[in-house]
Amino acid sequence: MVEMRVNWHRQHKEGLSAGDRAADRLRNGMGSWPFVGIFVGFMVLWAAVNSYVLATNAWDPYPYILLNLFLSMLAGLQGAILLIAAKRQDAIASAMAQHDYETDVRAAAQIEMLMDINAEQLKLLQELRDLRDKP
Image 1 (cartoon, rainbow, N blue to C red):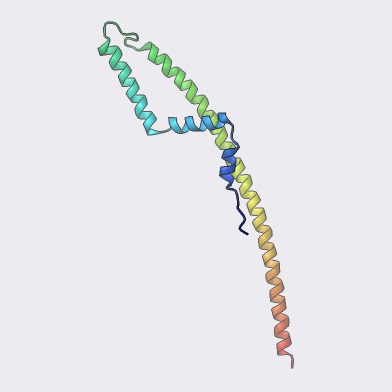
Image 2: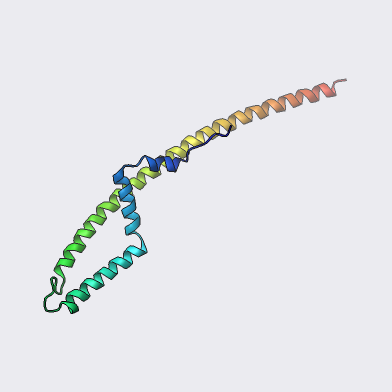
């Protein structure tokens, strides 16, 4: 019978809370080129609409005080989200280190058992040689 082993990383991901999963998704989204492109596009669009399209009736004329407020709020939220994600990453690294240690301890015990078996086999082989070489 084949023993099915559960992937540790998958098991860990299944145990995450909704907030942890959301922080990971936001971190992965904000740390991507599509986010940067969309962000720069939004800022260019904001400046274009408020400077040229609605030049006489702009809701946020130059120097774009409202945009500055939104960017400050976004920076504050990004900082908090990145700290949450970093804290989670530290927890993952710690759990993986513990898992590696436990794996190493089990492997050391198995190696020791195999070394004992090998020593016993060498002892039996030596006894057989001694029996063979007896006159």
